[in-house]
Length: 293
Image 1: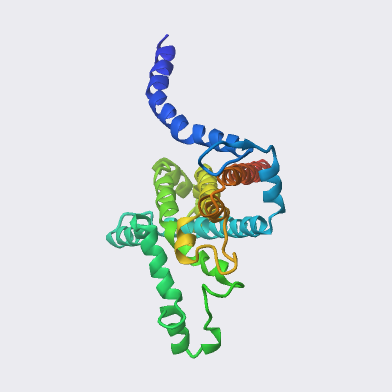
Image 2 (image 1 turned 180 degrees about the horizontal axis):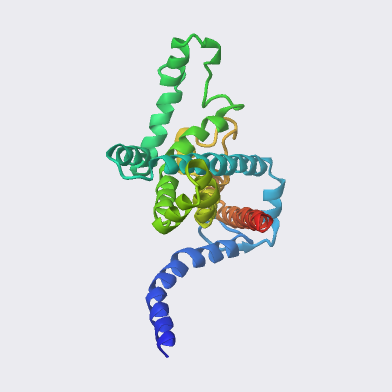
């Protein structure tokens, strides 16, 4: 009876948050999926057209360019932000003054406006007054100086450093919390067994925060697939759609062309792609875990 009362209490406590989540997240997703089957300009009557919006998306080369760029962002986030944050967490999870200062400095981009971050990196990449080309010039590497955001061949890769820099602090804090929550008894037992340094890190610490790393991977994938503001501020998807992402593709199709039905279909496609990538990552993680066992 006591357990039943606890479940009811927990359910009542979660109910308001679940209702708010359903109202502002689930309902809009379903509503957007519904309008994806219509030709609608945002006002007036919506005309049902079946799967024509989705057919047009599949046939549009800009969509595939945007999907490719989003995959690049996902890979850069998962294999850039996660390892860097994990390495920094191992180095900075203690509580000395220097480590606390460095943690705060690394986390600082998370509290900055994306507009500020985008403008800062625009100045860094500026071909005439940018610090990057200035440093290359100072080092005698004039041949390495490029039009970082204007060259269609490298623009998408130039966006990766600001992407990683912006969010690595978030995962640093998550991993530090996970490492600090490992019981001191486990560390003491490992010390008695002779496991210290790198051996303890690889055999004990990292396996014990595996679930946290998996959550971070999910956050990386979902966050990368809905990336918009940084790219829109720095390049607006250009040049020649070279940095177009699914979110900017949706924005331009919806609010520039006033095709709300088509934009809704793109939104639904983004949700589907997100679920597929997250499901694949979790399947691969579970397979790896089974192999280790």
